[in-house]
Amino acid sequence: MAELGPSPLASGDELPVDAARAAIAAVLRPVQGQERLPLAQALGRVLAADVVSPIAVPAHDNSAMDGYALHGADLRDDAPTVLQAEPATVFAGAPYTAAVPRGGCIRIMTGAVMPPGLDTVVPIELCSVSDGRVSLKPGVLKPGENRRKRGEDLAEGGVALPAGRVLRPADLGLLASLGFDQVNVKRRVRVALFSTGDEVQQPGRPLAPGQIYDSNRYSLMGAMQRLGLEVIDLGLVPDDPALLRATVDRAIAEADAVVTSGGVSMGDADHTRELLAARGEVSFWKVAMRPGRPFAFGPLHGEGGKTAYLFALPGNPVAAIVTFYAFARDALMALAGSAEPAAPRLMAASAVPIRKRPGRTEFQRAIVSRGAQGWEVRTTGAQGAGILRSMAEANALMVLPHAQGPVAAGEPVEVWLFDGLV
Ligand code: AMP
Ligand code: MG
Image 1: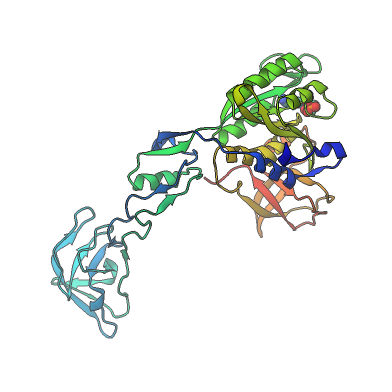
Image 2: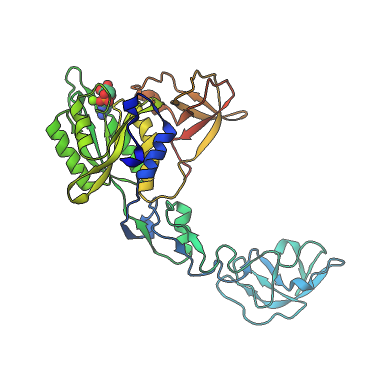
């Protein structure tokens, strides 16, 4: 694959994490299909096109307060302003169309359309009212206050939400406020997922000596379901060339991307690597990172020109999750058509000193908490690549970048939170 260049494995060099991410991003093309969904089913889906507002929001100048609507030009700043109230009240949803003369005012409720010519609202608590006369002290109000202007939130014809937006709760509310009950979204990205390895067993079955349960498929399935991806579970495939070939061919035929774990380490049976290499332009990378070095990426080609992008993750349970977050997460969201920046990251003060040598990116399982001075982060015990429990205890990954050396206690470090706010 021209864009990826020769495999760095050949030269023995390690590829920096950022270079691997950039190489992946350069190759991916978003899926094209779209569908029209009822608003209530569109949460988390990717907007297929800009949504242009068919109306101005708000549609009319209206009151931001319960109070009296008046002519701003009648306000005095040298003496109390005294106005004659109309014998009526303007409610939201029932516009008052008669003219209110200069020197007059009218009782108005929040959200009610401003009567013609009136441009200011005095909140009720600033008024004293007697005998139909409303008076307010000088200087408490400026002309134009407490009036929401037509189109102030959104102009008619303006872009309310851009293509590529991953729809959040407030976005659904915004679409509803514009009168839309349906929305065009990108079709969901389909990801085929399978685990490899003769020693790996399906949970629920008894373990033979030397076997371990397939945990990766469940961690990765959960991560992808959270991203709104459609996961095609192709199960567990033993290290058998024929079975592997059949599974890969099915994955290419049915999915936009293929996520596998295990079988790409240097020591593994060569047939996995050979098979993947034969199905497309897959690069086997040795990435300068810990954990999770063996990793393969590239397009696989099937019958009729069908392409699916392969993300072959290492088998170690922690490495599989870390490489998923480091390389597959943002790539799969880009494939889904998302134009959103990567997941939010924050800086937190390291609670303890950390040993780190420059020349590789280190991902540590960590707990971010609120300290006296702000966000604090500490690692969760033993960081061996197979220790899944410390990943389950973590709420974030601490990411120590390529060039970073040792970290002093209190020094800020980047963390990737597992949970987003919305
Ligand atoms: P591999 O990358 O296939 O060499 O696997 C590296 C390590 O991860 C080995 O100890 C495997 O037993 C383990 N492993 C591989 N696949 C899985 C899996 N699906 N679930 C849990 N552990 C796995
Ligand atoms: Mg294996």
